[in-house]
View 1 (tube, rainbow, N blue to C red):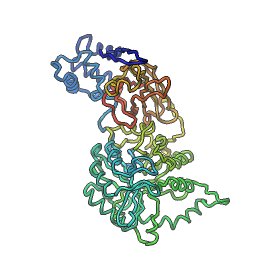
View 2 (view 1 turned 45 degrees about the vertical axis):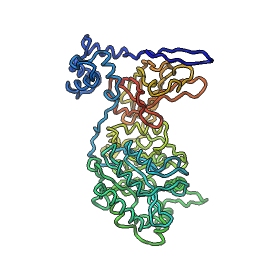
View 3 (view 1 turned 180 degrees about the vertical axis):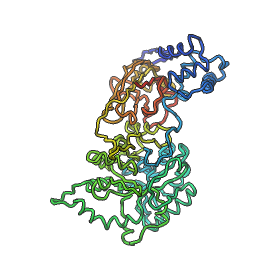
View 4 (view 1 turned 90 degrees about the horizontal axis):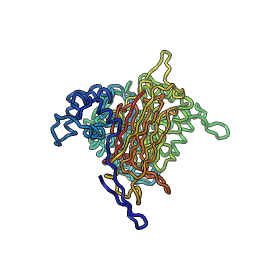
Length: 579
C-alpha cells in the first residue's frame, strides 16, 4: 500500500493510498457464477458473459482466451480465475470495454442512410481568421476516423497553382498538392470506408482541370468515378471501401447561378419594400456571406469574364453534386426522384428549417445528403449542438475538429459507434415512411422507450498518469463524477456522485436512472472533476458513449483528456442496465 507525503505550512502530512478492491456487486457475481468455489472455470466465465453481461455469442473458447490473457505467465490457466483475477478482468478496458469495438452495422445501404464523421475547414490549425493552414489537422482528423474532409481551394497569386486557405481572411495557405498527398497516405489508417473530399471551389476552368489532373495522378485507382453524370442513388460504404469520393458543385452551375440569381430574387421575394430581405434564401445567403463559408457557392470572377464552361475532366470526377437552396426552403428540400444531391445549410439556416419544415428536412435526408456547418461568428473554431442535425437525419454535421469542449466530446462519442469506422447507420425511424408518406416528426415528444441505469462504482489510474501535486499541492485529490445524457431535448439530464475526499482511487458505488424517449440518438457523457474549494474544479478525464452501443453488465470505461486523446491508465468501473 503506497503512502503519499504532502507539505503544508512547513508540516509534512502523510496519506495512505487505499488498496483497490472489488465492489460488492463483483464479489456477488463471482460467488454466483463460480458456484461458491475459489476459482471460476472457462465454462463458468462463459455463463457470466452470456447471462450477466448479455454477450450472447460468447463461447468457452472466448472464455479460455480471456483467462489466458488475464493470467499471462502468473500461473497455470487451467485453474481458472480467482476473485482477484476476475476483478482484474472486469477492470481491464481492453478486455472488457463498454462498447463493441468492431464494425457491426449494415454497411450495404446508400450513403444517405448514414451519419458520417465530418470536418469543417479541415485544414485550419486554430481560429477561422488568422491561423495557419496545414495538412497536419487533416492527418489528425483521418487518424481519428473522420471521413469527410473539407478543402477551400483558391488560385495562387500568379494563377498557375492551387492553394488551400480560408478565403478573405489572414490564414496562411498550404498547397493543395500537399493536402491531397497526406489524404492519400492517411485516408484508411483508421477506417477502410470511403473518404469524401468536399471542395469549396473558387477556381478558373484551367485550374479546375489542373485539380482534376492532381486527383487522378495522386489517388489513381482509389478515386471513385460516378457511373452517370447524376447518380439516381448513392453507392454504399461497403462498395466504396478504400475509395476517395469527390463532392462539390458542378462547374457549369457556377456560371448559371449568377444569371439566375436575379430571377430567384424576384421569385422568392428577397427584394421587398423598405429594403427588407425576408425569406429563407435571404437569410441563408446573408449567413453564408458573413460566414466567409459559402460552401461551394462562390462564383469565380474569372469564370464570368472568360465565359467558359468548367473543365469537363473535373466535372466527371464529381460523385455527389452540391448546390445552394433555390427559392423557398420547401423547394430546396424537394426530393428529386432521378438524382441525388448534397444541400449545405448553416447551423442557423438548419434551425429555421427545422422550426418551419422539420418533416421536410427528414424526408429530404432519407434520399439526399444534408451538410450542416458552423455559423461564421464562430471565429474561435467553436461548435454547435449536433443533435439538431442528427434528429433531422443530417448526414454531414460538420465540426471544427481542432479545439475541445463538451460539444466536440459529443461528436467524438457519436462516432465511437460501429467500430469507430466513421459511418453510423441512421436509426430506422429516420428512414421509415408511413402509408401516406408521413415521416418522423422531431417536434413530437415521444413516450419513454427504455430506462438506462448507470452505476458508478469506482475509479483508478490517476496516480499513474498525473503528478502527485497535479490536482492539489497539499493533499490527494477529491474526485467526483458527472454523468449526463445528451440527446433529444426530452432526454437531456445530468447527475453527479458525491465527492470522495483525499483519495487517488475513489469509491462511489452510486446508481442513476435515465428515462429515454429516443435512446437511438442518446449519448452518455461522463466527466470526472476534482473539487477545489477556492478555484474552478480541476478536470480529471472524460468520455462520451453512444447509449445504443452500451454493453449491459459491469465494464471498465477508459477516460480521455480534453482533446479526446485516451489517457494511459485512468478508467472507471461502471455497470449499465436497460429496463
